[in-house]
Image (cartoon, rainbow, N blue to C red; front, top):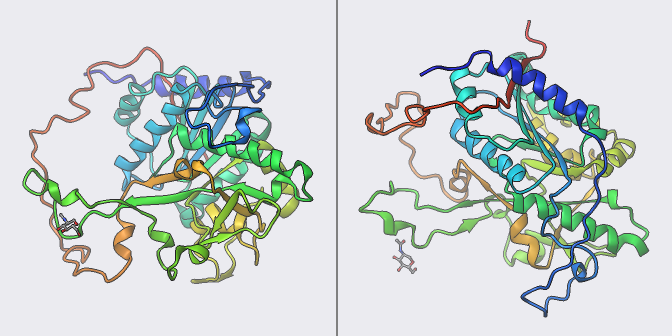
Length: 383
Ligand SMILES: *[C@@H]1O[C@H](CO)[C@@H](O)[C@H](O)[C@H]1NC(C)=O
């Protein structure tokens, strides 16, 4: 099997050309459609539809991925962003901020997976000494490229974000702007939010042919919103006490592990609260008052009112809520809720039982490389 070493050098240049060659000119497409549920009288009837809304959009996506410890999740994440390109977005540029170099074989494998002509992936190596501040890197990237894109997504490396979620974010953002035309509030006082979910598989079972029925009661769980008293409303879920309250609610826990923002919102938040500056999480030393640096950069700086921008997170009360929920791929945090089961692993002495070595791997089936190379790598600040 031959791997094209020169591939990603070319790709870096290609990517830069792409970024420079892209010109402006997006608009929300007017799109009229009939709806199958006429009783849901929503605003899109007279204005725009969620269908095709990704067309003409240029997206810049930044992912923080320290190393390869979450590699299968990262692969799913990248597939989902590539789907956004296939779904019709004008351009999808993904930048991974990493601290370890990626093997050429892996880049080559990925090149063969991403045929969309308007998709690019760049891996930017950052010094490992950044440690927890690797999550800061997206902020300058976004503001350096503010005029070249319509929509920006920052995310950790294990959250699957589908075209549906991105289209819904855009659609709900436009809808909110319309509600606010007669309000004293600005669109930048708000951001459409995201809620993460996992599936609550039984804690003590490995699913195989004999135990597959163990998944029959498994359902999506919003684990980070579980620590509130019931009833759900008004504890985990709160009304927003504002003009838009008949349409939206907010989560008491604002953590999302990611955020989406339009160019206009990022520009407004720069003035509002210096959102373009990746600040340190509040608190001293090991005692942060509003979560770790990851939590601060992904959520609290935006939504927090004590030290942050105090932007109000909004989730639609109408049918879009499910479309704004995203899968946390490791599917492990739900186990933190309730009593920890006895843990045999994680004491450092564990020996993992390896799956069969006869399983046909992706690398074995990597028979050819595509004609185009779209995965780029570059090196920033490695001394
Ligand atoms: C699923 O839930 C039902 C009803 O509570 C229970 O009887 C059944 O044992 C559960 N099945 C599994 C596999 O947990």
